[in-house]
Length: 227
Image 1 (cartoon, rainbow, N blue to C red):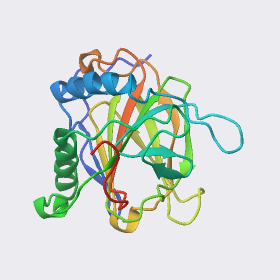
Image 2: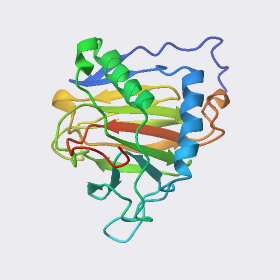
Image 3: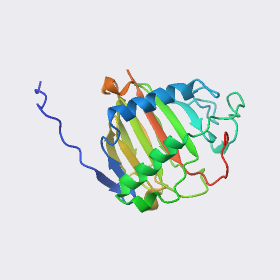
Protein backbone atom coordinates (compact mmCIF):
# COMPACT_ATOMS: atom_id res chain seq x y z
CA UNK A 1 0.00 0.00 0.00
CA UNK A 2 1.32 3.43 -0.92
CA UNK A 3 1.81 5.84 1.97
CA UNK A 4 -0.40 8.92 1.80
CA UNK A 5 1.23 12.13 0.71
CA UNK A 6 2.34 14.29 3.66
CA UNK A 7 0.70 17.36 2.09
CA UNK A 8 -2.52 17.99 0.15
CA UNK A 9 -2.33 17.87 -3.63
CA UNK A 10 -3.25 21.27 -5.10
CA UNK A 11 -6.47 21.34 -7.09
CA UNK A 12 -6.41 24.34 -9.42
CA UNK A 13 -9.53 25.95 -10.86
CA UNK A 14 -10.34 24.59 -14.28
CA UNK A 15 -12.50 25.44 -17.27
CA UNK A 16 -13.88 22.01 -18.12
CA UNK A 17 -15.66 23.29 -21.24
CA UNK A 18 -16.47 26.77 -22.56
CA UNK A 19 -18.61 28.39 -19.85
CA UNK A 20 -18.19 25.44 -17.44
CA UNK A 21 -15.84 26.16 -14.53
CA UNK A 22 -14.76 24.08 -11.53
CA UNK A 23 -13.52 26.05 -8.50
CA UNK A 24 -12.20 23.62 -5.83
CA UNK A 25 -12.63 24.48 -2.16
CA UNK A 26 -14.65 27.64 -2.75
CA UNK A 27 -16.75 27.19 0.41
CA UNK A 28 -14.79 27.17 3.66
CA UNK A 29 -15.93 24.95 6.53
CA UNK A 30 -17.93 27.72 8.22
CA UNK A 31 -19.90 28.32 5.02
CA UNK A 32 -20.43 24.59 4.57
CA UNK A 33 -21.75 24.20 8.11
CA UNK A 34 -24.14 27.11 7.64
CA UNK A 35 -25.54 25.50 4.51
CA UNK A 36 -25.87 22.09 6.19
CA UNK A 37 -27.84 23.61 9.09
CA UNK A 38 -30.09 25.51 6.68
CA UNK A 39 -30.68 22.45 4.49
CA UNK A 40 -31.70 20.37 7.51
CA UNK A 41 -34.34 22.98 8.28
CA UNK A 42 -35.64 23.07 4.69
CA UNK A 43 -35.73 19.26 4.60
CA UNK A 44 -38.30 19.31 7.42
CA UNK A 45 -40.77 21.41 5.46
CA UNK A 46 -43.13 22.98 4.63
CA UNK A 47 -42.42 20.46 1.86
CA UNK A 48 -40.31 17.59 3.24
CA UNK A 49 -37.37 16.08 1.40
CA UNK A 50 -38.43 13.15 -0.74
CA UNK A 51 -37.28 10.81 -3.49
CA UNK A 52 -38.92 12.16 -6.62
CA UNK A 53 -41.32 9.86 -8.48
CA UNK A 54 -40.46 9.38 -12.15
CA UNK A 55 -42.98 9.16 -14.99
CA UNK A 56 -42.10 5.50 -15.60
CA UNK A 57 -43.09 4.55 -12.05
CA UNK A 58 -39.71 4.40 -10.36
CA UNK A 59 -38.11 6.88 -7.98
CA UNK A 60 -34.87 8.78 -8.10
CA UNK A 61 -32.15 7.44 -5.80
CA UNK A 62 -31.37 10.94 -4.49
CA UNK A 63 -33.64 12.78 -2.05
CA UNK A 64 -34.67 16.32 -2.98
CA UNK A 65 -36.23 19.41 -1.49
CA UNK A 66 -36.78 22.64 -3.42
CA UNK A 67 -36.79 26.35 -2.67
CA UNK A 68 -38.56 29.08 -4.64
CA UNK A 69 -40.11 26.81 -7.25
CA UNK A 70 -40.90 23.10 -6.89
CA UNK A 71 -39.36 20.84 -9.52
CA UNK A 72 -40.97 17.63 -10.61
CA UNK A 73 -40.31 15.81 -13.90
CA UNK A 74 -40.28 17.84 -16.03
CA UNK A 75 -41.64 21.20 -14.90
CA UNK A 76 -41.75 23.77 -12.13
CA UNK A 77 -44.85 24.47 -10.05
CA UNK A 78 -45.71 26.91 -7.27
CA UNK A 79 -46.75 24.10 -4.93
CA UNK A 80 -45.42 20.60 -4.31
CA UNK A 81 -48.00 18.84 -6.43
CA UNK A 82 -46.36 15.42 -6.00
CA UNK A 83 -45.81 15.63 -2.22
CA UNK A 84 -48.30 17.59 -0.10
CA UNK A 85 -49.39 20.45 -2.38
CA UNK A 86 -47.85 22.98 0.02
CA UNK A 87 -46.00 26.07 -1.23
CA UNK A 88 -42.26 25.56 -1.11
CA UNK A 89 -40.03 27.66 1.14
CA UNK A 90 -38.70 30.90 -0.34
CA UNK A 91 -35.06 31.46 -1.21
CA UNK A 92 -33.41 33.62 1.46
CA UNK A 93 -31.56 36.65 0.14
CA UNK A 94 -28.26 35.44 1.61
CA UNK A 95 -28.48 32.29 -0.51
CA UNK A 96 -29.31 34.21 -3.69
CA UNK A 97 -26.37 36.49 -2.94
CA UNK A 98 -24.13 33.43 -2.55
CA UNK A 99 -25.24 32.36 -6.03
CA UNK A 100 -24.30 35.74 -7.48
CA UNK A 101 -20.89 35.60 -5.82
CA UNK A 102 -20.41 32.10 -7.20
CA UNK A 103 -21.05 33.25 -10.78
CA UNK A 104 -18.67 36.19 -10.37
CA UNK A 105 -15.99 33.90 -8.90
CA UNK A 106 -16.34 31.24 -11.59
CA UNK A 107 -15.99 33.71 -14.44
CA UNK A 108 -13.53 36.00 -12.60
CA UNK A 109 -15.82 38.89 -13.51
CA UNK A 110 -18.06 40.75 -11.05
CA UNK A 111 -20.16 41.93 -13.96
CA UNK A 112 -21.00 38.34 -14.93
CA UNK A 113 -23.42 38.20 -12.00
CA UNK A 114 -25.26 41.41 -12.93
CA UNK A 115 -28.94 40.59 -13.13
CA UNK A 116 -28.44 37.01 -11.94
CA UNK A 117 -31.48 36.24 -9.78
CA UNK A 118 -31.72 32.56 -8.87
CA UNK A 119 -35.37 31.82 -8.13
CA UNK A 120 -35.21 28.03 -7.80
CA UNK A 121 -32.85 25.90 -5.74
CA UNK A 122 -32.80 22.11 -5.85
CA UNK A 123 -31.18 20.54 -2.79
CA UNK A 124 -30.19 16.93 -3.44
CA UNK A 125 -28.92 14.47 -0.84
CA UNK A 126 -26.94 11.45 -2.02
CA UNK A 127 -26.30 8.36 0.07
CA UNK A 128 -23.30 6.23 -0.88
CA UNK A 129 -25.24 4.26 -3.47
CA UNK A 130 -27.24 7.12 -4.98
CA UNK A 131 -26.70 8.16 -8.58
CA UNK A 132 -27.91 10.81 -11.01
CA UNK A 133 -28.29 9.83 -14.65
CA UNK A 134 -27.14 12.02 -17.51
CA UNK A 135 -29.67 14.78 -18.12
CA UNK A 136 -30.09 18.38 -19.23
CA UNK A 137 -31.47 21.20 -17.08
CA UNK A 138 -33.89 22.57 -19.64
CA UNK A 139 -37.18 23.34 -17.88
CA UNK A 140 -36.04 26.95 -17.40
CA UNK A 141 -37.09 29.68 -19.85
CA UNK A 142 -33.79 31.56 -19.67
CA UNK A 143 -30.23 30.36 -20.16
CA UNK A 144 -28.67 31.94 -17.06
CA UNK A 145 -25.84 29.88 -15.52
CA UNK A 146 -26.44 26.95 -13.18
CA UNK A 147 -24.59 27.17 -9.85
CA UNK A 148 -23.70 23.87 -8.14
CA UNK A 149 -22.30 23.62 -4.59
CA UNK A 150 -21.07 20.35 -3.07
CA UNK A 151 -20.77 19.42 0.62
CA UNK A 152 -19.80 16.12 2.22
CA UNK A 153 -18.68 13.01 0.36
CA UNK A 154 -16.82 13.38 -2.91
CA UNK A 155 -18.39 12.26 -6.18
CA UNK A 156 -17.61 11.80 -9.84
CA UNK A 157 -19.41 14.55 -11.74
CA UNK A 158 -19.74 13.65 -15.41
CA UNK A 159 -19.99 16.73 -17.62
CA UNK A 160 -20.93 15.99 -21.20
CA UNK A 161 -21.89 17.61 -24.46
CA UNK A 162 -25.07 19.44 -25.51
CA UNK A 163 -26.15 16.85 -28.09
CA UNK A 164 -26.68 13.55 -26.28
CA UNK A 165 -25.82 11.51 -23.16
CA UNK A 166 -22.79 9.83 -24.67
CA UNK A 167 -19.23 10.88 -25.29
CA UNK A 168 -17.47 13.21 -25.31
CA UNK A 169 -17.72 13.89 -21.60
CA UNK A 170 -15.32 14.80 -18.82
CA UNK A 171 -15.30 13.24 -15.34
CA UNK A 172 -14.57 15.71 -12.56
CA UNK A 173 -14.11 14.78 -8.90
CA UNK A 174 -16.16 17.18 -6.79
CA UNK A 175 -15.22 17.41 -3.13
CA UNK A 176 -16.71 19.16 -0.12
CA UNK A 177 -16.73 22.91 -0.64
CA UNK A 178 -16.34 22.76 -4.42
CA UNK A 179 -18.14 25.10 -6.79
CA UNK A 180 -19.14 24.22 -10.34
CA UNK A 181 -20.83 26.75 -12.63
CA UNK A 182 -21.99 26.07 -16.17
CA UNK A 183 -23.48 28.60 -18.53
CA UNK A 184 -22.97 30.10 -21.98
CA UNK A 185 -22.17 27.42 -24.59
CA UNK A 186 -22.31 24.73 -21.89
CA UNK A 187 -25.59 25.76 -20.28
CA UNK A 188 -27.53 22.83 -21.75
CA UNK A 189 -24.80 20.21 -21.52
CA UNK A 190 -25.79 16.76 -20.30
CA UNK A 191 -24.42 15.98 -16.85
CA UNK A 192 -24.80 13.44 -14.07
CA UNK A 193 -23.27 11.74 -11.04
CA UNK A 194 -22.31 8.10 -11.70
CA UNK A 195 -20.50 7.54 -8.41
CA UNK A 196 -20.31 8.80 -4.81
CA UNK A 197 -17.28 8.00 -2.63
CA UNK A 198 -18.56 7.21 0.91
CA UNK A 199 -16.69 8.48 3.95
CA UNK A 200 -14.59 10.99 2.03
CA UNK A 201 -16.20 14.15 3.40
CA UNK A 202 -14.73 16.43 6.06
CA UNK A 203 -16.68 15.98 9.33
CA UNK A 204 -16.01 19.66 9.96
CA UNK A 205 -18.62 20.45 7.31
CA UNK A 206 -21.35 19.34 9.71
CA UNK A 207 -22.39 16.46 7.45
CA UNK A 208 -21.52 13.09 8.99
CA UNK A 209 -22.08 11.08 5.81
CA UNK A 210 -23.51 11.41 2.33
CA UNK A 211 -23.27 14.19 -0.23
CA UNK A 212 -25.29 17.39 -0.26
CA UNK A 213 -25.60 19.29 -3.54
CA UNK A 214 -27.32 22.63 -4.05
CA UNK A 215 -28.08 23.78 -7.59
CA UNK A 216 -29.31 27.32 -8.17
CA UNK A 217 -31.22 28.27 -11.30
CA UNK A 218 -32.95 31.29 -12.77
CA UNK A 219 -36.17 29.93 -14.28
CA UNK A 220 -37.58 32.98 -16.05
CA UNK A 221 -41.03 31.96 -14.79
CA UNK A 222 -41.82 35.10 -12.82
CA UNK A 223 -42.42 35.53 -9.09
CA UNK A 224 -41.60 32.26 -7.29
CA UNK A 225 -43.65 30.53 -4.65
CA UNK A 226 -43.25 31.92 -1.15
CA UNK A 227 -42.45 35.47 -2.30
